[in-house]
Amino acid sequence: MYRSSGYGGQITKTRNVFRCLVEKYGEESVSEFNMENWNKNPIGTILRLSKSIKQTHHLVVLPGDNNLKFLLVFLRKYLRSKQLKVYYMVVGGWLYDYLKNKKKKIEVISRFTGIFVETLDLVSKLKSLGLKNVFYSPVFSLREPLEEIKINNDIEAIKKKDTFSFCTFSRVLKEKGVGDAADAIQILNDRIGICCHLDIYGAIDKNYKKEFESLLATNKYISYKGFIEDSSVLSTLSAYHCLIFATYYYGEGFPAALLEANMAGLPIIASDWKYNNEIVIDGKTGLLFAPRNIEDMVQKLCVFMDDKKYLDNARIECWKHSWDFTPEKALAPLFEKIEKCGD
Image (cartoon, rainbow, N blue to C red):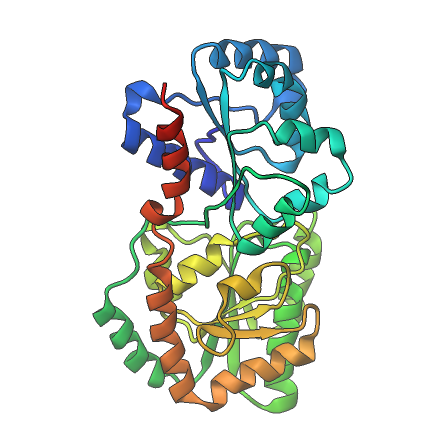
């Protein structure tokens, strides 16, 4: 279900998968259906979706948690015929928690041709529910990593900075740990005496807007920078010492922000939350800290700031790691399944 505009991991991945399907199979062979607002017109959505399904044997779906319940009920009758092949590209890491006590939903989803998830740990968890149709398909980006010479130039440019510069790059949401990151930066400046600053990028969640505005007003070491233009994401990120990703968001899977930090050669200080330890190689491409533990975050930030050689090496390792997440590698399991099933 493709959405043409907006921000966030769900929308970005949906858009990217759609574009790759079009590139692989041609515009005449791929169509899209947007069910973002199905609850406002459920009958109309059902009629239009039924018409679309009758015109295809292959259905690639990327529903959020709010849409999955509707989709499972709707698809049940089509799956019985075995004529429709459904490929579920999972966004985030919430699916196991959603399914683990729902036998009827597990039974329906077991009939899908494939469930493609972003982390190896989630593959194992879903298989423990008896699902055999689960495959590893990590997040990918349509961008290419920066050139190696750019990474080396950034290493030299960073060494000349008088102030340590950090950033966050995600939805500006309480559970993404933006406030915790801001508190850590304040501790580094006021208590430890390290001069540093935090720039915050991303869409502000409407429910967090007032609290975030208060945070900006009371913490002089942070700034809100809005959005980064698509063409400038990697070059903007590469100018920082480190990305802080302090999430404790329940639905976290493989955050695209971590992939793009790797592509920019930007080391990551991340919470050891959900599946982050699969993405951040602790001690190599970044460091992990205990979730919601600001003091531990501060200690890990100090490690990077105290050891410049360690920081330089981490930038190179991040860049190397990013080449494991190209569209060709990430979507290979999906394409293999589609082609194996044929027309």
